[in-house]
Image (cartoon, rainbow, N blue to C red; front, side):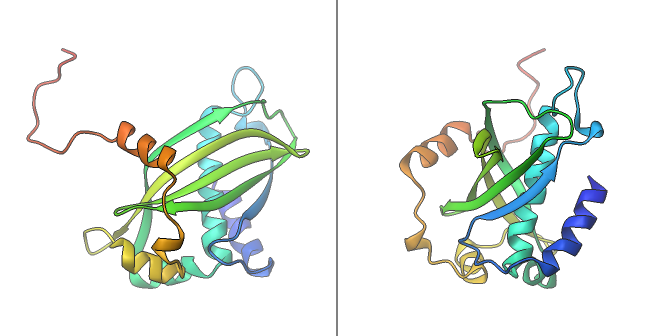
Length: 180
């Protein structure tokens, strides 16, 4: 993944600029190191490549350098992915990444793995931005940095329901595991 990140960082400087609300299309190829024992791309590799797709969107829109200057960094809060077709050795594919919406604490990104015009997998990622100095970046500040009006990017109802359904309970003092 490190090689891909370095290559992406170089390419992003020369590719067309995007608005944060645009769809970033990032090209990849299935490498031998991406494969599982069944000779198709490993499920975990999809998630790592999704990271690169989101970085490409932020880099090409100019948001990534602004985040780094401020000491902000993204973290995935939750994600879900649905697979339709396998990606096999040496196949080319494109990851399409776009911001879907915002709520009070997070941003949501849809990412699709597309090969020959067909969606092979689709994922939704809920992400927050943290400060290296501690705490979270408030959504109004983040929206301003991304040039987004939260009112123009409401969270679809189904996505708000997914977010609520997958949320962990509030933090409490550690308790013994109920699985013991």
